[in-house]
Amino acid sequence: MTRGCFITLEGGDGAGKTLQTARLCAALEASGIETLSTREPGGSPGAEEIRHLLVSGPVERWDPLTEAMLHAAARHDHMLRTIEPALGRGLWVVSDRFVDSMIVYQGHGQGADLALLERLTALSLKDFRPDLTVVLDIPVSEGLRRAGGRGGGSRYERMDTGFHERVREGFLARARADGERYAVVDATPNLESVSRAILEIVAARLPVSFNG
Ligand SMILES: Nc1ncnc2c1ncn2[C@@H]1O[C@H](COP(=O)(O)OP(=O)(O)O)[C@@H](O)[C@H]1O
Ligand SMILES: [Mg+2]
Image 1 (tube, rainbow, N blue to C red):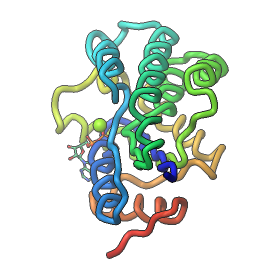
Image 2 (image 1 turned 135 degrees about the horizontal axis):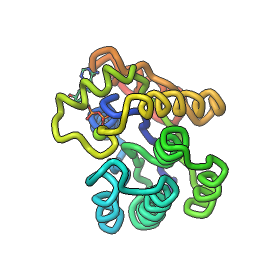
Image 3 (image 1 turned 60 degrees about the vertical axis):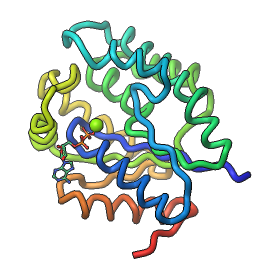
Image 4 (image 1 turned 30 degrees about the vertical axis):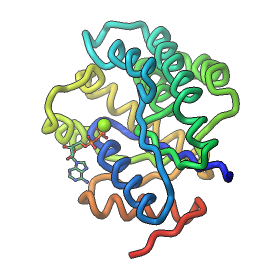
């Protein structure tokens, strides 16, 4: 059994990650690849319980390093219980957010030490990393406007504009530093155009082709 590929979609709030994760999974399925769609924080029963601690409640609820450790604990469970077993069975896995969100939100956004976050990543994931990470890039005001339209603002969506600007720059900096694993897609055009751009990248980098 050939191991599946692991793709993550990253980017700020309202960039379209959740919708594009579903569209990418549908396109992969249509081309004959069995897929698993998942998300962070969450993606396994234990990690979904931790998610609740992270996305609800007051903005100042956690110290950034405490918060990062909660994310890392959730991710360890998600990787062990959900992602690894699926990849081992040959499924392709698409995750709506993964480790880059922790490094960028808690590091660039909230000021946790980036070297400590890399150590936390090494501890929780060892050398497990996505095969491809697509960063959906959108101006902060447009992302928050879209997310606002969705209603029920999460704890992260309630953080200030400076935080969201640092998050956007953090994702772009990580993508610039490793062009092999990352690709940046302009998330401002309509849903269909963004989907097409994502599929082009996936087909160029991974062993799949999409018809039509
Ligand atoms: N390309 C797009 N053009 C217009 N609206 C979009 C686009 N992508 C997403 N949206 C809308 O923006 C909101 C946030 O999308 P969502 O997929 O939930 O973003 P994220 O998961 O990145 O926060 C939703 O209401 C969605 O319908
Ligand atoms: Mg989402």
